[in-house]
Length: 223
Image (cartoon, rainbow, N blue to C red; front, side, top):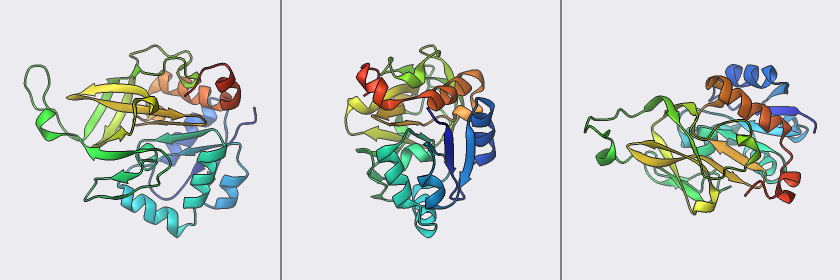
């Protein structure tokens, strides 16, 4: 498949790291700041760090909200970190407010009372560093060539609660078990940063470039 990739730039992400990682595995990358640049891409990456409310404000200011929704409805689409959280319906970050509503679910903080390890020591929030991802949708094409339980790099204070288990493609344990990847049809999104996750992250990005959601669905390999 064609691999013209739009990495959406709304001022809230380390776009250089994402772009360089995609280029390393063969992607033809455009840093997209306009709806037109998103529209002509074959596949779209929606990265980000920070707060959802600021993310939505920035998307609206640049006229990108509809472009993100259209891409998530029609093209291979990868959300990363904040780009995964923003896909949900609502967020409890600094009070309850709507998110993009592309996937059913909400964004919540880590439960403070559960932030202890097996020895009873307090776990730090934000959750920063390497942790294992266990595949809930093991046959998904984006996991190809990656072992169940492989480690990826995380930086986040909030987690996603999907509305149903059918969306969960990966889970991670940090005090609690939380959703670290979601998938539905042509959309895949991760709480971790594949661009910072060494070989496993590069493999996931290479898989994204090669991903044909329609063919995968026919083969029973996606949600």
